[in-house]
Length: 127
Ligand code: HEM
Image (cartoon, rainbow, N blue to C red; front, side, top):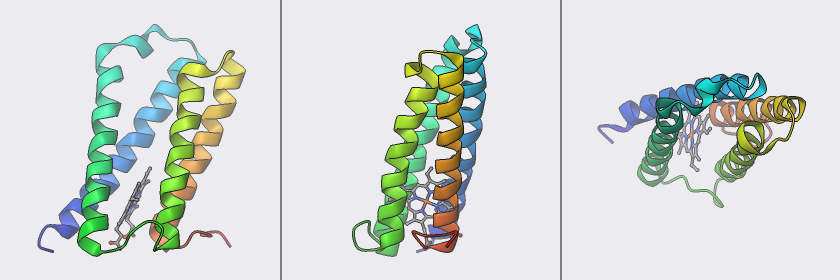
């Protein structure tokens, strides 16, 4: 348990970096900026998201709170998958800037839901 609070803080920071990188990439995608193809922006977000998940697995295992046992963690995991799919639509798969912008807004809304679920430990954080 010694490192638990440090890892939780790291998890929160990785989450904040994740959405920051996402907003930046989504803006560049919508405005068709060549910066989207820069090497660092293709590598860093994935490295950060891997660390976010590694920290999440540590927290799950050490706190003995598991998805499919705790509803809020199931909701978080499911919403994370939706966030990743919407993110891919926003940055790569959307055909027009309008489509990509629309998917980016949906992805940001899902991210806000994940954050609210985490803080309230409830699958229905706004209800
Ligand atoms: C974008 C994705 C994610 C975001 C924004 C996020 C956000 C957060 C935040 C803000 C906290 C701190 C909550 C608090 O104690 O007030 C937290 C804790 C936690 N997260 Fe995440 N998280 C994400 C992904 C995940 C995933 C995929 C899992 C595992 C299924 C996970 C498992 C946990 C666990 C176990 C805790 C510790 C809760 C506790 O100490 O009781 N997180 N997360």
